[in-house]
Image (cartoon, rainbow, N blue to C red; front, side):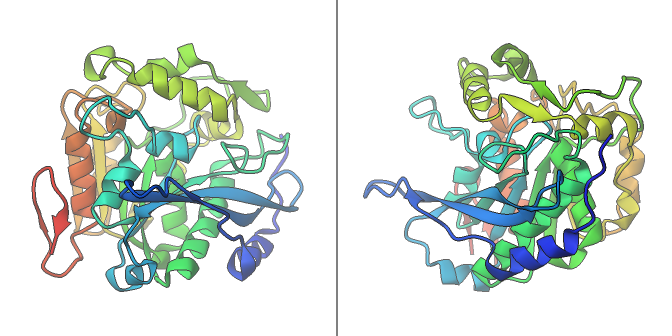
Length: 342
């Protein structure tokens, strides 16, 4: 197996110095409350150590003054799981399906957050190369660091809130251990905390994604009609294949994250029906107990599975995440079903 290069200091310098500029604004119609913006951030290829660009997608209120986020600190970065990239995971658009959005990014943006999602290299809209086994959890943590530094500079904040889903809990957890001073609050959503699985590590560089396979992320009874199909179609469009360095880590190198080394306020949240990162993981109670910061929560959402944020019970998830990221706001209070208000 090829090893990732060691030129990560170069990546940090590049990301700090002119990583990337935003190129255009999406959904800027007069009737839109929320706008989106593309960003490309400089990182380093795990294949050959050369510069590449990773994609960061932003959502915020159209009328928000970007300079205000430096004062409020309401800046969030979301990290995707092992198969599908960040924008697809967290900003699924299904107009007219229901009054409650399926986009975690839109939900948080409407409540005054500046929300970003990242596509690690070889995922989604980021640059791709032919070494899938090179893209490990550590490589993803370096891509996250590049994105975090770009966002900190862009918005003038010292720390950002982080959320990772599934494998994203491992990448975000590792990043937080290595650079805790950049993290304000952390959400571990459907965390993988097992020790090595009894599955053979992959030998090919990539694995193929199919609509049929991706729909298995959704328990039918917990999911609104048409959502799994819409997600799978969009996912295959942007991620027809996924790098296998991720599976190498998840099958043969766990545990990668030591919870005792995560010093920041941390919330663990899971769906009760999750069969991918189940609540029955034997290591889960000890993992939560070992989180050293007394400011922590463990939440199980009934009637929901691994893709909780896209299922019927998502309002509970949205509320808990918005609340967790708002607890440091002076005079903050929550109105059920509405925005977080001072």
